[in-house]
View: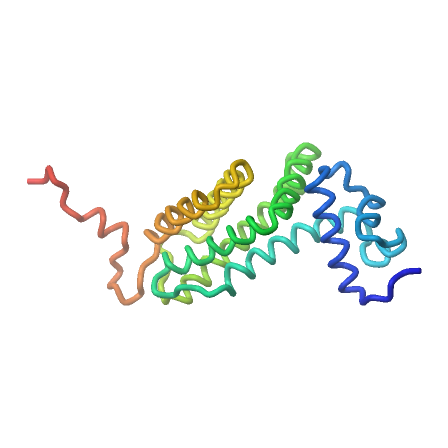
Length: 218
């Protein structure tokens, strides 16, 4: 007999089951039947919630990305500077990565599988969603600390995503959380160079560094 649970909860359970199956056995093994078996649901429950398998895979990407954004924006954030705020968010991501690595494994599996199927298809869409989320997080950090970005936000978002990809792969390889946090500190400091207070008279961190005298200056 099908358990009487709300559709929203059933949807969450199917997404969680899909993540476990993908992380454990890869995307190819994450058939609809394997996922409902993992979720301990009848096959009919799947079709009641999702139109097809692709819709569930998209829901997996959306759910994990949204949780990462939520963690970055809602954990206890140090708002004393944009660098501190970014580091708080990055450390929140690392906490989530260390606690639930299967989520990131699932996303990587999905992205690589999609790339092999279609070079201009779902992987592009997946990473575009990452870039969008990163831009939202950067904008939130700027608003929180009353600063503004002095470089194009889309470029900074791509830098943040590239850095997070590196942190993720490094941690999945060695599980060195302390090293991941050190890398996060470098990333926060590098991004903060492109933040400036509106009250600073238009003098950005980049221009200040550029004007500093060097030891060999006359």
